[in-house]
Image 1: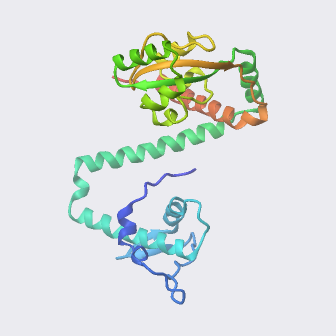
Image 2: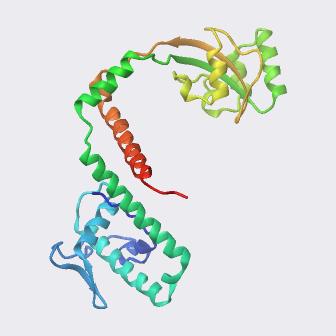
Image 3: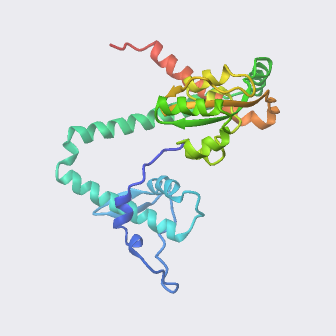
Length: 274
C-alpha cells in the first residue's frame, strides 16, 4: 500500500543539508544509520522515530533518484525536524486548533479511503477477459471522426464579422490568422489546429465544426468562453482503433476506475446520509 506524504518544504529548509551551498568532496554528509526495522531511525528527547517512518518519507523524497547515503541523511534530518517542530506546536497548544484538527482528520480519512480502494482493487482484479470485452465493445461501436481545422480567434463579434467579410473578398485565411488571431498556439501556423475529435473542443466550437463540410468556413461568429471564432474545416478522417496491446494499460486503468466507482456506490448503498 502506498501512503502519500505531502512534501514539507520547511523541513528541508531547516535541514543542515539544505544549507550546503558548495559540496565538499572530502567531507560528504554523514549517512543515516542503515535502516533496521527493529530499531528506531532516531531518538529525539526520548521519543523514538520508527524506521518505518523513514521508509515512507524516503519514498516520497526520492522522486526517482537512486538510493544514496545523502538521501538517507536528508530523510533522517527531516524526520528529526518534524518531531521537534510538531512537539513545539503541541506544547504551544496548536493541536487544539479546530481547523488543524479537522485538517488532520481529513488527511487520516483520505489515507484510509485510499488504502481501502487499493485493497478493493486488489481483491477484484481486472481480468484479461474484461479487457478483451471492453476492447471488442469499443471496436464494434462508432468511432468518432477526427477533424483538421483552422480558426481565427478575436475578442469581439464585430472583429469576427470583419474577418468573415474579408474572407468573402478572397483574403487568405492563413494570412488573416497570423495577423489577427489571439490564439498564440495556432496563429503562427495560419490558425492550424492538430488532428482531433470533437471531444477536444468546447461544445460551441465542436458543434460548429461538425456542421461544416470539407473546405467550408463558418459564416457567423462562433462565441465561446475564449472569444469569437471563425472556423474552417480542412479535412476529416476516420481513425483506426489501435491494436489491443497498444491500449491494454489504458483499458485496465479505465476498468480500475470503474472498480472505484463500484466501491463508492456499494458504500453509499448501505449508508444513511442526511
